[in-house]
Structures are given as C-alpha cells and as structure tokens.
Image (tube, rainbow, N blue to C red; front, side):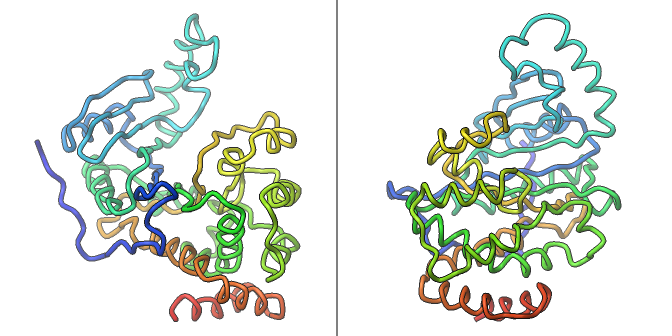
Length: 325
C-alpha cells in the first residue's frame, strides 16, 4: 500500500484542555473543499494510500471506512446532487437526474472531503490527505482568484457548561480581527470567502467582563443577533445539541446537525500548494482556546476592548501581542 509522506516542518499545538468531561481525548473533524478530481477518483486514491473499505452512497458521494486515519467522506458539495439523503427520495427519476446533473456540475461544484471526529493528538495524521489531493491535481484557493475554498475545523467543546461556552465565544470575538488578518491578509478576498463578521453590538456585549450568562440566555442572545450559519464561528450545531427546542423555535427550517462541537469556518484551502498544511490554522484556533482557559486574562482583554477606540486592524495588533505573550 502506497504511503504519503507527512510534513515535518510545522508542529500541531495541543490545546490547554486535551480531554473532555468523560476523560477521553477530545476530537476534531476537518472539512476541505477543492476542485479537479471527481469524488470517485479522490476516494479511490485515498483508499489506495490509506486502506479501508470504499462505499458508494450515490454517484457523487463516497465513504471510506476503516482507513489508516479513520473514516472519510468525499462528495460534491451540493445537496441537490444527493437526493438519497432526503426522506422519500430513494426511488424514482430524481436520483437519476441528480446523477446526470452531477457529472456536468463536477467541473464547477467543489468537492468536500470530511473526516470523522479524530482525536486531537492525532490531528497531524490528517495532513497526509493533502499530499494525496496534490498528487491527484486537486486545486484550491490560490488557483481560483474569484472563489475561496473552505477549510473547516469542528473541535469538540471540552466542557458542556455555560462558562466554557461563554469563554470560548468571548475569546473568539476578541481575537477575530487578528484571526481574519492572519487567514486572509489580502483584503480583496474578504468579499469572496469570509463569512459575515459578528455584529459590533453583539461583540461588545459578549466581550464585557460582566457577561457570563446561563445557557438559555446565551442561546437567546446568540440567536437574536445571529440567526444564520454565515459566521466565522458557527455555533448553531453546538447550540442545537445543547437545546434543540430553543434553537428550532427561532430557526425551524435551517439545516443544522446538532453536535457538541464548534464549527470554525476558514475561507482558504490551498490544496495545490506543496508547502500548505492545516497546522497553522489549527494553531491559531489553539490560541483561542488558550485565551478562553484563563478567566482573569479573558476579562482583562475584554475590558481593554471595550475601552479601545481604534479600528479592527489596530485591535488586531493589540491582541497579537496577547497571543504572543
């Protein structure tokens, strides 16, 4: 079985809380978008390199089970092309139409590769995927100046309580100007790939050292300001997991799969770049976790933000010093 070399130049940092409430190593799922090879060719190459059992879900959706790095799925990133995932659509002409349309659309619609939840201390193994994609000729953000291909992390929340939830959100909104600058320093890409930022009034509410709500109030406040999935840090899957009825009362028809994870959405998957690794983006997420882990420092940074009168780019310079300290 062919092996793909692992990058060795970038270390994956460990978060301050490695285990969940059950004492098990926390997990993180990774999503990578790309164009070029078909979903079928991609999963076949993954099977050749990583082993495992290949399962065809439909002509444009495949699963690889029991591989050397766990379970993976690869599919065209369009729900219309996978009608079998909807109730009552397994039979009839619709799947055939979707299959035919999918072959035509495969030149325009990106593929999405999704890993199963992987223990955080094994995250570096997922970089093997990038070498396989590059060998296939997969293309990413740097190959499409008018399109941004996503890289998403789904890290498990370490504790499912109100303080942990609020601390992570505080840390993220305070660091987000720095995160956005580091992820995409080219401002022209802001219109292409980035999710909408959190509303300024909501950020100021969250940043306040006095804001430590219980979970029901946190959810109500979040939904009032962010009734959408289009945020850098999409909390809807986590909030749905914590209180499905409360979320569905506001968003009855939104596509949300509840799970005890954050959904960190990045607009830059540079899959054809030989030097690209998911490590730098992961390490910036760890910076969020480190600030969230210390309430005294978190409250101090929040208070400083509320007193700050400069622009986001200047605040990014301030919190960069916090991250580096």
